[in-house]
Length: 318
Image (cartoon, rainbow, N blue to C red; front, side, top):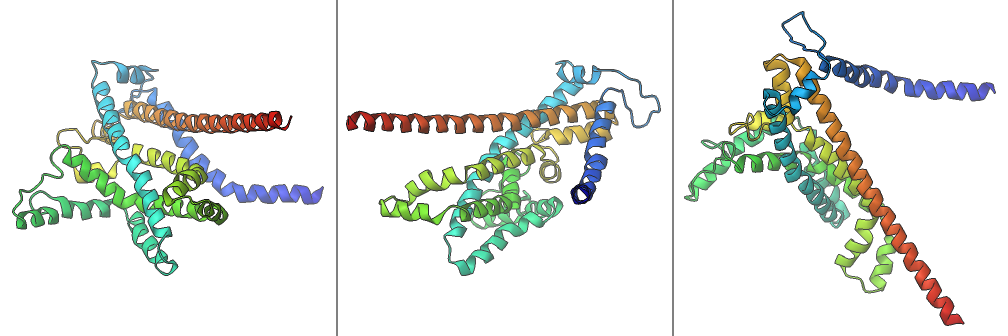
């Protein structure tokens, strides 16, 4: 009995640091943010009256400033998610497939090369790509001028601004997804590939019927984490385009920060942040449900096929 209680106490001590950090830096800020969102909270005023759902109502009122700011930022954020997430998943998987098919001696080198940008801060990434993409003095436009081509306004016109932000994001974060996919590929049983080779399966069929189904849980994880990370985009558009041209690359987090610190309205900014969090939760839940429905449908089809084969054999035996 004493050993059991001591074991429970020891387990609690291991969990305690994480629990304290979770409460102090996540749970309390969330609760306090919800509290602020129900108030008219001016940073320079001591008078912070309770307004109930007024901040949320103003966001959905088409005639208000909050409505235009919130939905412009949300629309731009969705555009970035749509542009970036498929590339983050597909290119990450392709790089993983390429690296795992290289000789063992050089795999470590290429893993390091692709992963290094991920450990660099977003400010450094932005500086590098500003140096490359600046319209007047960027390295890429310098090479274009040498070739007799006109300079491209990478950061000051649409769609070039979005292309620049997405490319910089891919270069920065693709190494992390690649490492996840490499670990997943290494877990695929080699016996499956050997059996497929004996049956005469091509590399494409091995990929479609063995590799992708086996690493599907990791693909879902990468897809969800990439979506959440892309929804939280802030540093790249802020540092590279400042939300321009106009406000066409001003994402939702930029709108929230501007409302909180430039307009000094923490109440409405908190309401926008809470809605953003709810949207992200809803997207994650939908992704999980779609994957579960797909898995259940696949399981039912397999069972139905198995029952049909068994019934056919039974009839033939009689």
